[in-house]
Amino acid sequence: MTTPNPPKPAELDDACRSAYTHAVRQGVFVEGDIAERLSCGTDEVARIRDVLQQLRLLAPCQEGPPVPVSPDLAEAELSALLESGILERRQQLARIHRQMRSLAPLYREHQQPIPTSRAVRLIENPAEVRRELAAAARNCSREAFTVQPGGGRNARTLNEAVVRDTAMLERGVKMRILYQHTARANLATRTYVRKVSALGAEVRTAEEVYERLIIFDRSVAFVPQERQGSQPPGAAIVTDETTVGYLWRIHDKMWDSARPYDASDVEYASTSEEIKSSILRLMATGLKDDVIARKLGMATRTCRRYMAGIMDELGATSRFQAGALAAAQGLVTPDPQDSTGGAQSSD
Image (cartoon, rainbow, N blue to C red; front, side, top):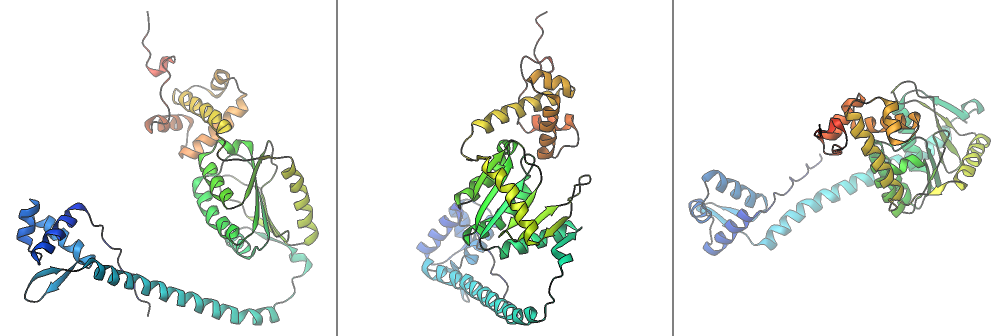
């Protein structure tokens, strides 16, 4: 039977320190004395007592109030509990490795050869695609190449990716990641790039990236289906050597023409953030797309791409809601030159 995790030790705040100091001087923890010493009520004294007992700094006494315990002894007891849990989980991990590895030769011996027709497997279920992707990442031993078209990715997706990619990089896998230039303006993407770059990943951006693609060890490629609506698409998993090699060579040429992405370079990002801030402010006023684009001196199509990315980052369902949410969160401030921003008329 698995031993439950020891409870997380309570925090030793100033009140607990003062009470413990007084108890050490007196030799006992007398609640009435503590209440008078700290000028606090019985509920606070009870809380302090519970914290000190959780930290093993108070020991019960059969013939009187609890007595203070040496911090060295308390530390040893708490550390022993944690180390016991760590040891047990290491033993569980070793047992899992031993059991699974004992079955691997049997599986390889009886596994049927994959027919040529299965060199491309189409998986419709996005959750199953993620599982296959995680398995391929775990098995990757040499190199991984990722192409991500569009702007920046959302924070939740990147948080999942950074765990997977960090594990590969720490194993010595070489990693190349290709974005479009517009991803440089996304805060979550810049944070992700800083993390993986520090571990050795190479990241570049190109003006135009055609399709999303992930290739592991030049032996397996994940090619997503065309997205229908807002639901994540399925993917084709390609293991045919010729096809994977062809995909690699095409995107390798794209990589050669791309620009290195240094996440500490804020010139492009800061400019884009200024544009986004202006668009947010104007969206909050209810102006039409073409009017906003004309005010900012950009194409309407470009302006709409910015709007779509802003709405996605803010979780808004309408342009006006995005502007209002940004204003409420202090992301933008009204322009005093805009009549909708509250400027007083001089008439």
